[in-house]
Image (cartoon, rainbow, N blue to C red):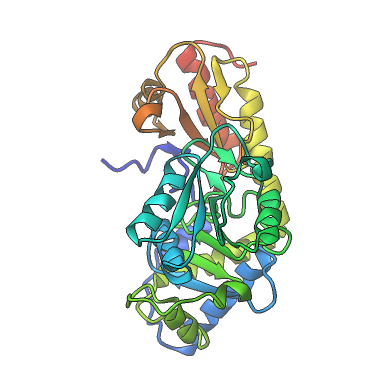
Length: 359
């Protein structure tokens, strides 16, 4: 079944603008030329500017999902002689643990719950680590970590600070220099509101000094950096998504820049949360990002039943959780081409489902 006529509030893919959709509808061009190199350079410069990257930082463009970016970062930057402190606050933190385990990288599985780690000094295990890995927004539970405090902790302890920013990029503040971040992983299908298939890894100069010669052809960052000097990638890039990325970054600039983009996501998120306060739903965590709201029913209903009812009866798609949280939490994204008017579709559906008049 294709859900083209459904309202979509899932945290990736997200609602895209007509302007970006039109770019994707065009014939994919040839890319081994200076014209496409200019596109790559433009995207790199804009991305570096958006995250306030330090001088000399570089962007690697991978034709792959966000998980590939997570794995590639670990593969290229850590060795068997390192020890990583991996924040595990949910499904995506556990994925980083799996990545380290798969590649035999010594690590500590730092399990946390109900904290944004503003108290990491007190919570972190008393052991020596030289890398700190975190999903800035643990999307499985909708929890935003305190990147600034964690960055100070990493700097104080001389740790390489690797941040998966996939589900908060362009919706929540992200500043490499302010937060002392060495590596940012971003992806196309969330806040950037593009199709899935393109992942970007932003490396600080410090991170580039840590690059290893790895036993991988496709994920060798050194090869990407060499090819990046001429605005190219070693292997076929996601050409059309790169063109859409260029258009999307220009769109963000025309609309007022990254500050405006973050403010808009915050406005829509707050509007949604205020508009459902009279329903038997509560926010799953107090540490919510602008990007998403995680909700849990307070009336005994199954979260999964709510998800299914919205899809079946209202043609509205929100995101369920799996495993032990299947019946406990569901997630609503505020990423992409989101407006108050579009969000009203979901707000009205929820009120109708509960039989409660909207205030």
